[in-house]
Image (cartoon, rainbow, N blue to C red; front, side, top):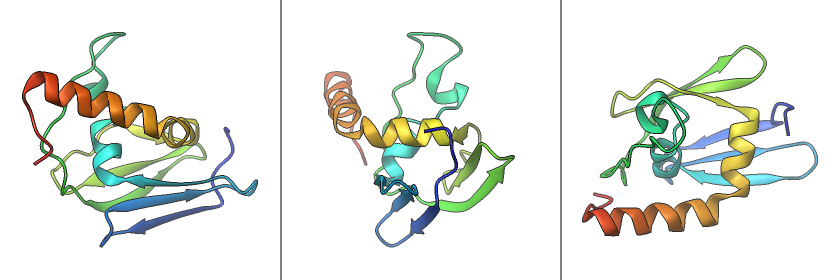
Length: 117
């Protein structure tokens, strides 16, 4: 899904970014999920298998959404994380794979003895 979404709606109170496409696909992505799965090198590392487990982001917010060319957005989180461009493909993949990604993340936190708060 390399086309731009038809709508991005930040629901600050619910801590969710809603992403909709013209084909009817729609995802409600928790900000905690977007922060902990950011495409930035700070989270993804610099190569395969180097992902960093980010904990304690349950209440993270987004202060700004900035367009980046025609291919994505930069989310400025209120914990000062502002690197990593969320391309349209990345947002679609994160939406499509949310359930499995989230369960994997929660299991990794538990194994590491870390929490969401």
